[in-house]
Image 1 (cartoon, rainbow over the protein chains, first blue to last red):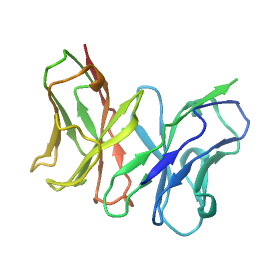
Image 2: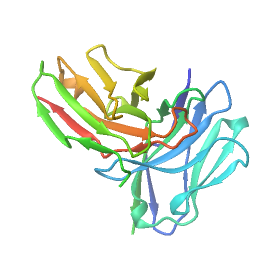
Image 3: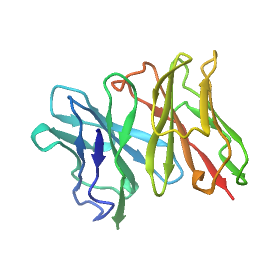
Length: 113
Length: 114
């Protein structure tokens, strides 16, 4: 069965520090992978996606993610975190024949001044 | 602003009642999705429609039903409501029905069942 695991429920980093949010997936075929961000009281916004090709993908707001098939991982990174990055981050895997997205439990990012 | 609209923003009702949540997709998007976000279950896919037809079904209870109308807006009907149905319900839309199309999410409808 398809599943997504985000091992870290809550992460706190200092402003200006680097960030890595972990995501592991289980999927039978080549997955479609996504990272979404949800600010308080808001809907979800797509940060980046991976379908195929280059395993390092760039997204909006300075985020990037790397697909590692051998580790079934799709970790999200940012070299320098800003206070406005405080939010909840969701990793998701998509089906190739429908639009169904399976989400991880989410990681809440807190940014210290 | 994603271009997806959902009404109402908030809904408070009692157990046993029935409610209807409405979603208007982005202009040009043919596929609509419903997701439920709750503290204990996280963010879960409920159902997908594409051009008026059901395309995929997830963990949607029998008490819940949905449809997509000819003008492409969608409604999610929740009946015989229970306390555990309290959640944030998101609608999303995309141009095509497969996952290699970005889904744009609405702001959600927060349902509180008392």
